[in-house]
Amino acid sequence: MLSYQHAYHAGNFADVHKHLTLYTVINYLLRKKTAITYVDTHAGRGLYPLNAQETQRLQEYREGIGPLWQARNELNDPLLIAWQAAVATAQASSATLTHYPGSPWWLSHSLREQDQLRLFELHPGEHEQLSTQELPANAQRVFGDGLAGLEAMLPAITPRLCVLIDPSYERKVEYQEVADTVAYTLEKARHAVVLIWYPLLPAGHHHTLLDALKESGQRKIWRSELLLREPGEQVHGMFGSGMVVINPPWGLDERLAAAMAEITPLLGSSSRYQADWWVGE
Image 1 (cartoon, rainbow, N blue to C red):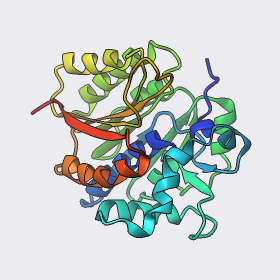
Image 2: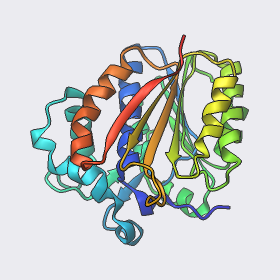
Image 3: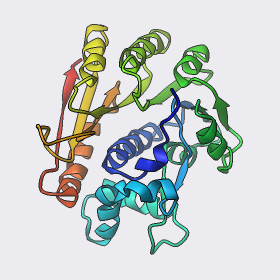
């Protein structure tokens, strides 16, 4: 099943949650000169024009990057200010929000000469769009299954590995597939930093993923969730966004908590953020 296209949801609250977390992790990793291989298993298009027909259909960015952009000159948190400044560099004009940068943009703009980036995308249309994006020489696009591709490239050729896994979860079995791939990855690279995004839906299928991770025996699993609204009988579709970070950099939890304290009021009165150690050290 390859019907999912992220352009319909570009810039929504889940993107803000996911990419702010990714940005924070990357900046911690860049404090050391040692080379990093980044892997994005479900890359998408890379850069999303917000005036695209697909994006305008749902306009989910109005409950995500939109209000943050409008408040960008009133922010106080240093991490959030820096992230918003980076978002501004993806715009045709720094004064107007016209594009939302996806994970390939964030990763490719963080590459140093010694680093590597592998971008996997299985959807033909999405991969075609990704192929139009300008990337540095040490970034490679791969048309194929990202989970299988990640497993096939292990061990990484660099001393450090950072993986982002964010499927659409159109198939329920993907929750278990992700858990299995993560277990294999950490067998081959036990110090890898692995980020996993998951949706919070009324059916609660994300518990399959979380339970499998806990039962794997892996330590140092931190999770955070950004809820746009509370779950309940009146909620249909995604009401929240979840992120798991395995082997997170020290201080990640505190930095994100401070940034989210400014973000949640901008997303509405029902929005809230929660985080904990799903599995400690």
